[in-house]
Length: 316
Image (cartoon, rainbow, N blue to C red; front, side, top):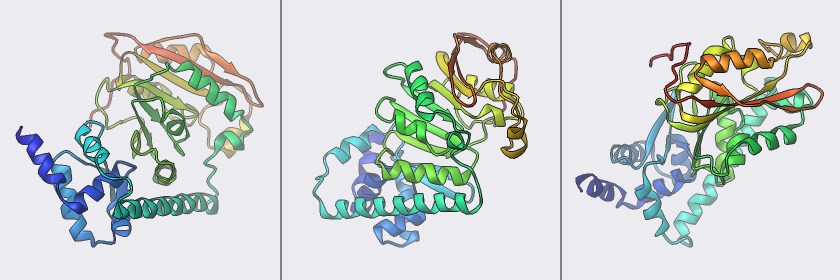
C-alpha cells in the first residue's frame, strides 16, 4: 500500500501528469521535454526525479544523454492516463508539440546520415526484396509474440511492424545516430507505448536472463566480428523454448561487399549457422530462403530448456 500511495502522490501534480502523458507515447530526453512543455530544465528535472523514484518512469542512459519512458511494469500510469480527457487543450497542445519535435528529429537524423554518407537502409542499397524478407520474418512469428527484442534494430522498422502484435518490443543498437532516427520515427507514429529503443552492445546486452519470448537479429551477423558470441548472448536473454530468428545473407562470393560495405562475413551456410545455434543452446528449425540479387535466409531456432551456451555470457 505504501508504494501505491507514493505513486499516486507522485502523479498528482499537473506538470507530472503531462510528463507521464508524453512519455507514454515515446521516449524523450530532458531537452525535448523542456521544449514541449515550455518549462526550465531544473524544474523538469525535479519532477522527473520524483517520477523515476516512484517507479512511474524509467531513466535510460545513452551516452551523455538520458531518455525517460514509461516502464512496461507501470500499469498504474496507463490507468491514470485513460481517465484524462482527450480534449484537454493543454494535453492536446503537448501532443502537437511532441509530434512536431519527432518529425524534426527524424528529418535531422536522416539528413545527418545522408551528409556523412552512412547507408542506413542496407536492404535497399543491396537491392534485396525487403517486403519478402519482412513477410517471411512475420510469418515465422506466433500471432501473439509476447516480449520481443530486436538486436541491431537500425531504423526500428521491425518494431514498427510488430507494434500491433507484441506485448512489448525493445530494439537495441550500438549507433546513437540510428537510435535517434528509430526513436523519432516511433514517436512520430505514436508507437512509443509498446516500443522502445536503447543503446547497447550486442555482445554485452544490459538485459536480464530469459527476459524475452522472441529475439531477432536481422541483417546483423555479417557485420559481427564474433557471430558465435553474439548468438550466445542473444540466447542468454531468451526464455526457455523462446524463439530466436536470424535473418542474414546466405553464403555468397561477392567480395566487394566486404570491401565497400564493411561486411565481416560473406554470408553464412546452413551447417555453420546450425553449429553456432547449437553451441548457444538453441535447436535449429528448418531454414527459409528468400530469393533476390543476393540470397537471404531465415534461420529460426528454439532455446532448449536447461541448455547452457558454450560461449559464456558476459557480465556487466
